[in-house]
Image 1 (tube, rainbow, N blue to C red):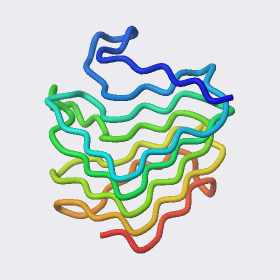
Image 2: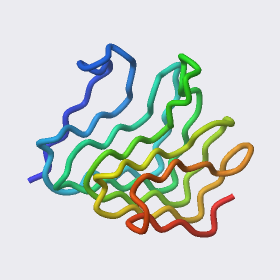
Image 3: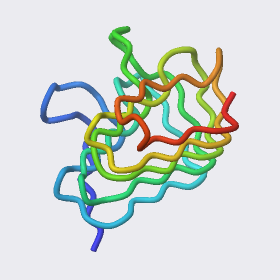
Image 4: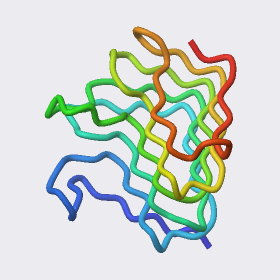
Length: 130
């Protein structure tokens, strides 16, 4: 069963986040044709080690309100598929943490080029992004 913790504000650092997928979340959280806009710090924060997050044909804009390099999507654990999304501002688009099992990043477009900070090494596959 998928249970999703959704906050307008993160309880951890009091920064605005649109969607936080908590550590206890099991199953799949899929977003299709969604738009996320701020001002916010992060659009999506995936924390579940056993869950999977998928974003397909989504639009992201106006994140990193503090100007510290926060990504629109932060994946700290579990699995993620991010495909066919648009990121309408320059900056870091996806942050992939070292505890991630698998991340697939395909056919995404971003202002200034698609940018990923990958700390998961070979557990992240990225192709056909611009």
